[in-house]
Length: 622
Image (cartoon, rainbow, N blue to C red):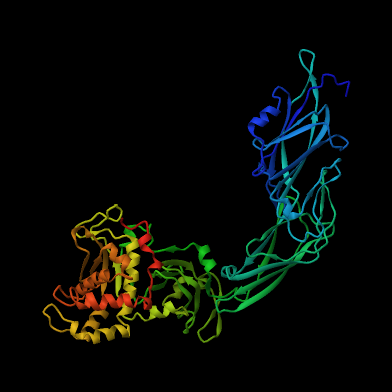
């Protein structure tokens, strides 16, 4: 060393980036580095995972939670008489004190918490010494990722014009690769609905031996005890492992529990084997699921399948006015709020005019080309309120097995959509809500109109006594008329009319028989529903096919007797009565119907305002 009298210090920089590693401040860095000193600069990048036989060269700057590095000489011995510093802000490592010669930079980066892996990181003296190790009885996958690089470089000197010596600058990129492998456990489904019917996935291991020790030269050694705990694949299907010890394989069993729409449960076990686990590599371990319902004609739409499908809804706040006031696109009968059809493209269309979800729904179909019997076509765990579901039926995608209503199963070929003409539907559900909807016998047709108003204006663009109805009001009208048409067939409703028959009279004060009143309430009607502008001291309008109330009435019909009297006042006009009758400013509207509606709201299909929570909707008029 004494012969190197004029040896200049070397600044050696390796670039690494860290997300959580405590970084030196820029001020600290500037006080450490001598910017007049020639530098050897290395920038570190993380290489992306490779898959199959491909070697992906894409990379990204490193971000580590822990970083370890050191330099070895030509003999592999650690160079001790150097000063090194890491700057997370710039992803640089600075090494000072290196002299002319050949070296290797060794870098170990950790993403995650290595303590969860019970990892030990050593301070090796030689390239071949252990640097990282895991316990033999870890018996679980790794939770952190471990990156490594070994980069050779040479420090040389040159003569300056003044006869002095200086260290030649070095700049080089360094690619960090994971020393660990990733195993992804994947599943193939012949029937896409089976994917979302899996209720449990478990992974077990045979005797699997992993390397436990990693040295500075990149070599692996050691061996785990061969025992691995079972893993849950329900939430996570990707796991990290050290490479396999010599002669070992990743092997074991995958166990699946799958439910059917008929309430049955099937548990299946599949063996798997992976012969190699390569560092910085994704190994995809595929299990082809052979389920008894693979060829079923039933669309088994579980909650998770529905969520994955991201199906639309009708009458939502962002729906254009041109859509929701178009009766060809938005109209329903309260006795048939669940609308079913098969489109020209072979898709089952399910549209549901309801603020409430409907559970456990089995849709059956009868198609002459298939059978004279009804067969199971689709099962929904839940049909959400205001659902607008479109999905291609299996019958037009492949040959299928149909379960007939008699219990027989028949094999049918793939059909063209035209062959499915004449389809008839039938619905079954164990949901008590469905039982209530089935009791609506005398349905009214409901659609919506603006009556000159403009819902896109802040004040609703009032014209005369009307303002622009918005979807938040349309949804409430669905609730109101489902409840009203349910109410008119209730025995209790008929009873209260009979008990108060003396309070039923027309505009000339002539008595109206109960049977006549019931007939008027139960006859087929079509209403174009709007929103009344209260600025003219008018809070309701009705007559013929026209019906509207002011905003407060739409939001408070569940509990407010006054707004209910306004609602029934306008329904009295719809039934053909004027202001001198009991059906407007009289006992039918202001005593009997309004109070009966509120007192019996718990029995109605839409029994609570919480389904819609319209008063808190930001799209209501202020």
